[in-house]
Image 1 (spheres, rainbow, N blue to C red):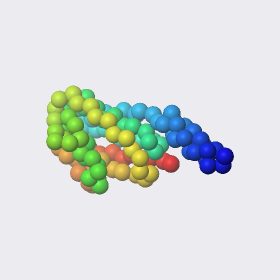
Image 2: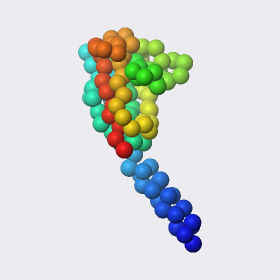
Image 3: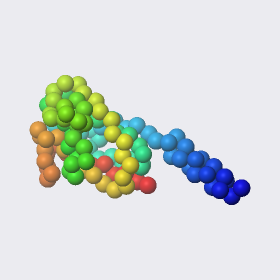
Length: 116
């Protein structure tokens, strides 16, 4: 009986985490900024990056993602009105920037803080 109870609790916790996942939007703007530039989310939440105008992409400081039209082959800065979504599962802070207008130290950049 105890293993079945343990399994039921584990499943309930997984569903609770999935149920609380939220979607946040970070916009790459024509004025070479991200809005919001800095955001705090919870583990399992989604950020949808959207291009509102200009030649942009999003590149994680640690190289874990580089996205524009997609996060695979078509990830160079692009002026199309693209949107891509990423699920963040690792707790910590990750910086990101637009390769066209920023870099690891300045320019068009932001940060994502993921809480447990």
